[in-house]
Each structure stands twice: as C-alpha cells, then as structure tokens.
Amino acid sequence: MRRSGAGHSTSDWINWIAPRVALLTLCQILVNLLLNVERGGRFEWHTPGVLTLLAISAMLAPLLVRMGIKSRVAIAMILAAMPLLLGSHSGPELGWFERVDAHSYQDWLQRLLLNGTYPALPWLFFVVLGTLLHDMRDSPDSRELVIAVGLGFATLTAIAAAMGGQAWALTSGDAILTFFPASSPFLLVSGCLVMLLMRLLEGEEGSSGEPTLGNRLSFLEPAGRLSLTIYVAHFAVLGAAAMLLDGPRLDVIPAFAVTLGHTFIWIPIASVMEKRAPNTSLEKLLRMMDQSGR
Image (cartoon, rainbow, N blue to C red; front, top):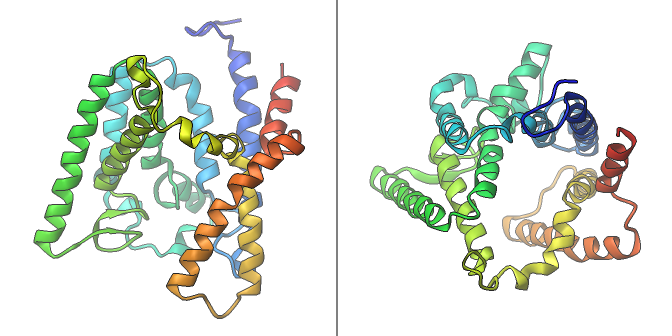
C-alpha cells in the first residue's frame, strides 16, 4: 500500500473522504428540496450549492495538507484573482434563478465550478485561507501584518467607491464588492475580516495569555459543533415559511427582525440538542460513517 507524506495510506484517505462527500452531497439535495422553487423557495433540487462546495473541499483536503505555506498562499492569490481571470464565465449577467438551474450536465458543471451560487472557482479561496490561518497560529506578527494590509485595501475600495459614485457592496449588481458572483475585492476584504475576527476572538492567547473575547462567546460552541445539522434544519423552517408566505412578502424591517430571530434561536436549540439528544445530528451520522469505514 502506497503511503502518503502524512503517514496515511491511500485507502485511509478514501475512507475519510467518501462519507463526507456522500453526506454533504445528499444534504445539498435535501436543502434544495426543502426550499424548492416549486413551493415558493429559492433552489432547484439538482443544482450545486455551498454543501457541494464543501464536498469538493473534502476531496481536496488531503492534497492541501501536504502543501507548504508558500504554495497555498500562491493558490489563495490565484483563487482571489479568479473572478478577473474568468471574466464573463463567472456569469455576472445571470439572475438568481439562472444560477440555481441547469438544463444539461454542461450547465451543471458550470454551476459547480464557475457560475453557480458558490462555485469552486473562486470560493475555494476561503478553504485555502482556513488552512493558512491554522498554520499561522504561531506567527501572530505575520497575521497582524496581513490584517493591516487587508484593512488598508478595504479602506481603498471604500474610497474608490465614494469617489466614483459607485456602490461599495451589493449582493449582486454594479458594486466593488459583490457576492453573486464573488468579486476579487470581496474575496480579499471578507478574507481580511475573517482574519480580524479570529484575532479578536483569540485575544492574548497567542502571547500565552487568556482569550479576552473567546471565553465570553463559548455559549456559541454547541452551534458550531452542530453547524451542518443547523444549516439543513433551518432550510426546513424557511421552506415552510416560503409555502405559507407564497405571494405577499414582509417589509424590510419585519423581515430583518424575523431573520435575526431565526438566526439566534438556533444557539439555545443547539445547546439543548447536545445535552438531551447528542446522537441525533448529521455530525453524529458522519462520525458513525467514519467508524464503519475503518
């Protein structure tokens, strides 16, 4: 059996990858069905989304962990520049329902890789960034330098938007930072904010001190551990709401209040689930699949 550089056999990697890819793909289909367009929702049942992006991440993880930091930094920069390199292939003219639909396997592959809601190019940028943040835990000076440069870049984008009379950030449309499709400035600014948030949560831990903010937010940990379960379950709620509200929609302020309430309610629910029903989660199912594959 051929051994990898990390000391695991090829079959070990396959056994690690396979259940994750299978479960994430099935969960993506389930999410699509729960909030399907035919019942007032937002997804076609068969198209890729954020969970298929994570499935691709699971397949690439064994390769990423073998790479050095410099190689991954280069990959992250290429991914950040990908919206510029792809040009019209990222589908800047596509509306939402075009992004979540595919009429052929070529369309499906394009949605998966180039112009869906969370295409691998460029959204794998955040996966590579996560590996870099993990490996840079012992290099606080380097991280803080990157954060400072990132904040400077974010400031420049805001100034450019103001001077050019352009929107700074929009979900989609004519703005410097766009989400659908993800623009290069959006990737860099949001990546910087991720690094800044992690640094704030870490506090003085990197200097052998105690975390100043992380401990205060420890009540969020159950929700983090059950994030896949929560992600899928919250679409069941949204799907039911879409059917009930088929037709009239809430105004901005009531909709914002409902969104916040629906977000925060999962925090105590996750805590109760961990204590009262620790075996009823998708995360537990994944661990069982891992064990059966060994």
